[in-house]
Length: 434
Image (cartoon, rainbow, N blue to C red; front, side):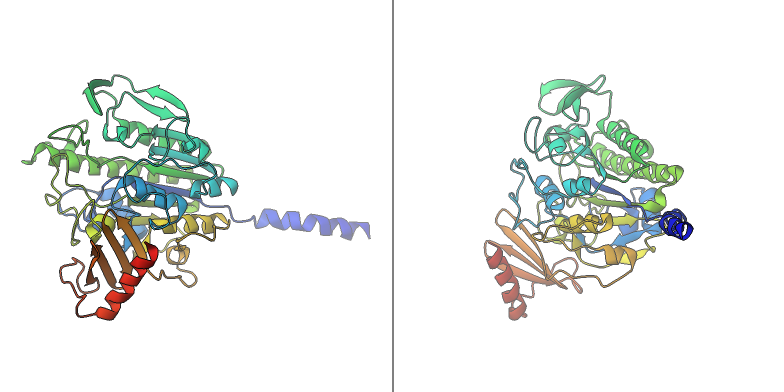
């Protein structure tokens, strides 16, 4: 009787070797800065070249109705970290906010679920020594800018490696905030190299990388031309204003580096166990010499950064996961606050109950029923916005305009007077969330 008993003990181990448990997918969440809905070829851009993003969209899932957390940087980033829209976060503007100790973020949840967590790029929620420092908010590793304002400068004197200030060779500040007189080391290149190094170091275990590139944001303090790049590349001979050459070069540079990351995943043999999401923190800017209409950065949408019309908040999102995601296009309405529950579901861990986000895993994988939002909500200064199905309400100083996005993606015709019951429902949502 001993032999069968020993076989019974050994059988589960043997079967486990034949059919190992499915590994947790690696998660890479890339958020760039001020990229418009119309700035990529796969979203209709005709001039600026983005071949790798276009290929990524062709091989993955392109979302047409995805929204940022806000129309400016800091609150938008807070939204995806905590899974709540701006009625339920501590800030709804670019005012300083430090994440308090014990904050429940997507990063801290993934860390507890066994992920090695890395943040590379622009961080805006806590300085050195504060409770909001990335290393105190779930990130095992951080490299980049801690100060949102400093991230305007593409040639800073230093970046931060965890809690250590690290010099960038050759860069010298001019004596003016965020303006360098000696420009040698381009910060975007450093950020990309650090992201690549993080993937190489951690590719044999589940990892989460939150890569927050600060291009194509302008350097607001560099008067006249804030689109700082080492060179204009393929756009050098174009008969365009210098800031437009710089903007186009930034987008194409970012396109190249997205391709480098996807190529690395394939080289390491982990592309079929890695979800990569690319998106933007808000709509396109009209600053630093760059004109939002020059390349039609908002596409068919009304408005741009600092507006709650869709041009300020509807953003590109591409999800890439070979073998798991069926290539296509999705019009599922989703938003930044959905990332936390989506990441948690993929990691096999529970999301908090008090969030606003809805996992879009069923849409990604084409399996199961996709839960829908009752509405999406934003607040900014004296403005409020609600998306409810095909309807979009934008309130300014208590006056509500109503648009049917299925017929009027450019939000040109106010239908509030013709649809008083819909306007009343949206107004009630806004009032309830005040």
